[in-house]
Length: 250
Ligand SMILES: NC(=O)c1ccc[n+]([C@@H]2O[C@H](COP(=O)([O-])OP(=O)(O)OC[C@H]3O[C@@H](n4cnc5c(N)ncnc54)[C@H](OP(=O)(O)O)[C@@H]3O)[C@@H](O)[C@H]2O)c1
Image 1 (cartoon, helix red, strand yellow):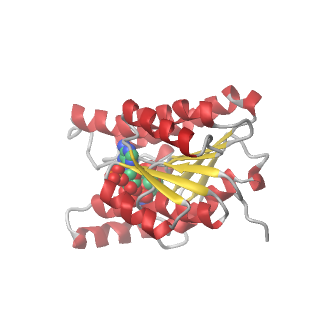
Image 2: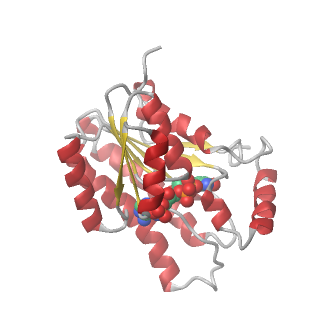
Image 3: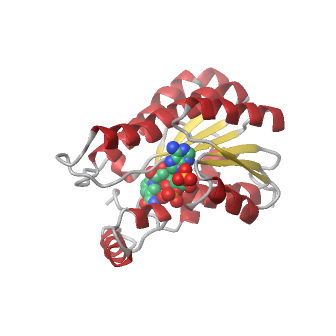
């Protein structure tokens, strides 16, 4: 069977762990060369080793414009273009409305909204006509989960970007789509809990809200990102594709 991303150059932000790492592995399995980013160099080094010689790691904070400039200068020099961009870097923490501080608000918006915006804006000169952009949002873009208001608002913003950019980039035939995962078992979910016992309870609670009765595996998101990034999705533009075991569908 022909590979879906043969010869493509792909960038996965936040590609050192979780959904980003699983997607980078899938991209490579489908024939792409991949650049992954993240803020922790040691995490990137381990991931690059795991993915293999088709991967390069670049330390870059998605919310830092100077880092993005350096990242794209390196990709330009190394590969000359980006055919597929998966803007995945992001995260959040629980805080009820009375607990939210200015720091929490700015940190979350900086990484999830400003980061995604400038990751895409600054990539555009390197994306050839016909390229594909996939943004990682979340089911919380359309759900009201208590203590998650700032994070959820950032993901609603990400979903909104895909609408506008689909129209703005139509003359270049660049497709922009959103993948919105339900609860996926990644280090980010463990990070929401105080200790392993609380993490276990949190995961059980999340699984119980999913019609399929379980959390998703990062690779189950990766497979859908490959679809959206590939020619299989040549007539798919501006969608928010929920990959959530039915969580917000039924
Ligand atoms: N897991 C879920 O249930 C779930 C559900 C819906 C949506 N999502 C979304 O999926 C994406 C990936 O999350 P994940 O669950 O796979 O968690 P994860 O394993 O924590 O992955 C996030 C990755 O992004 C990197 N990162 C975070 N902020 C960054 C920044 N400002 N610049 C560059 N890299 C950054 C992190 O590495 P460094 O810390 O080293 O930078 C980490 O490797 C996030 O956007 C998240 O909101 C996750």
